[in-house]
Amino acid sequence: MKLTKAIAVDKNDAINSILEVLDKDFNFKIDNGQKDRLSSFINSLVDGLFFVFEYPYVDKVFRDCYYSYYSMKNYPYKRDSLKVGVFAGEISQEKFTAENKQFLQNIFRGFFIIRPTAQIMGRNVLSPMVFKNTTVLICETSYKVTICHLEFEVKGFPHSSQDTETMTCGETTIWSLLEYYGNKKPHYKTTLPSTINTIINEASHERRLPSDGVGLNQMSYAVKKLGFSSKLYAKDHYKEEFYELLSCYIESGIPVISIIENHSKGDDHAILCIGHEVVSVDVYNKYWIKRKIGDLDVFDNDLVPKKFVFIDDNTNPYQKSFLFLDPYIERLLDNKLKEQSFIKYKISHFIVPLHQ
Image 1 (tube, rainbow, N blue to C red):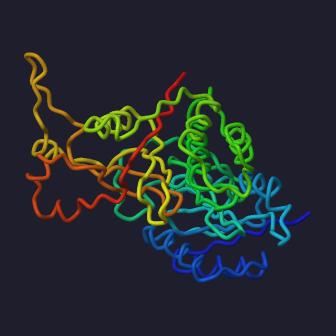
Image 2 (cartoon, helix red, strand yellow):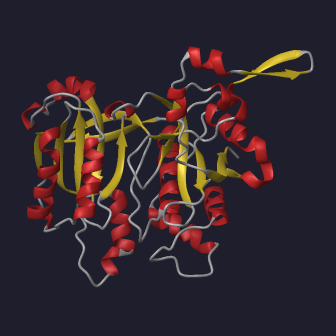
């Protein structure tokens, strides 16, 4: 039986400490691309954070991928992971006692997993407040996790990088959606990658592993089989109503699977839209569009310019981007807002996980 080790470091030492643990305890040396991904993640966090490392850690998601795929490969993969707890204040291992639990809970901001695969960033749930320049209104749920034998709770949205072999963007997006609903509502269940692949295999004519991606209809089928009544929308069909419908679902508190067209790698890409930035009253007053419905004057919130928030497995959690700009509103924008109005995610389809 392996004894679990635990160390505490501050943000400034986090990257080098993670590299050292992976090298000495996992015999896993990361390349420059993996180091850049780790650095991007750590550097996107606010200053003043402290991290608690626990290893070797049995991560349920990676272990599921390991036994269903990695254990059968010729190259030997480690089956354990590194769990990192994130705290907004100075801590040490000695502070993890029952007497200090409330203090630690007050400064607990979530966790993330480092796995010994090509894409090292595993599952994570982090509070939006640990990321720089992130003031958002999002779908979020409480998530319980143990750090040094004490149970803590964090509010956020589940995220993970794809590992490109058992989980591409489609599988990762479905996993994230079910991880959210399974922790938020009792009549939904969290799921594992092998279960998602088994369901998608029912709608496939080729082998599933290693995965070469998930089609739009396969994703909708999987969402339906996992307990939802899925509804699919296409931009070409709904035209000018497309973004208004998407915005309406987001305002209703429903995470939406979004398909991005013309992705940088040439393929479509699946992500989750989970909310939008906080919009000031001044912006609403300036950009509200008045519409006439019968004898009523109606102001349409869905057309007010705002950045939406995304869970994207190719980058860090809580990415923000405009979806569209109404031509009328675009003429009204001041120069500062025009500079910020770059549309990073151009959505061609979206899938809504509606209740049955």
